Length: 193
Image (cartoon, rainbow, N blue to C red; front, side, top):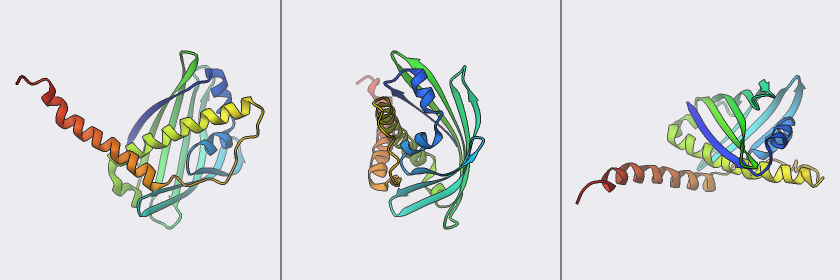
C-alpha cells in the first residue's frame, strides 16, 4: 500500500537536511518510535509501538538508510519488523524529499507499506488516516527538536510514548467522515435546483 503525505517545517532546507543526519534524533520525533541499537553503516535496530482502540501493536525490527542523496535532498529508509506477540509483520520503504517552501522546507514522504496480521484488519483508509495524524505529530516534534538544537539545548531523548489510540483513532475517524461527506455531498453541490 502506497501512502503519501507532506508537511512544512519553518526552517531552511539545509538545516532540516542536517537534522536528518542524526537518525536517533529523527526517530524520537515519530510518536511510538525508538532506536534501540546503532549497528553502524546506517543500520539500526528499533521498535515502534502503536495502540489503536483495543489493539496494541509493538513491532521490533531493523531499519537501514538505503539511499541518501545530498544534491536532491532525498533519503530512502528500508524498515521491516515483526509484532512482538507474533500477530503480524510489516515492511516499509520510506522516501522523504526536502524542497524549499518559501523560507521553510516542505517534506514529502512516501511510504510503501506491506503489513500482515492484526494491523492489516484496519484497511487502507484507516491506516492512511493514522499515517496522516502521525506525520502531523512528527512535523510538530521535528520543528521543536530543531528549535531546541538551535538554542543549544540537549535533544529530548525521553522514553518513547506509544502512539495512543483514542486521539489518533478519533482524528483518523474524523478524516474518514470528511472523505465520506465529500464523496456524498460534492456531486450534488453543482446540480441545478
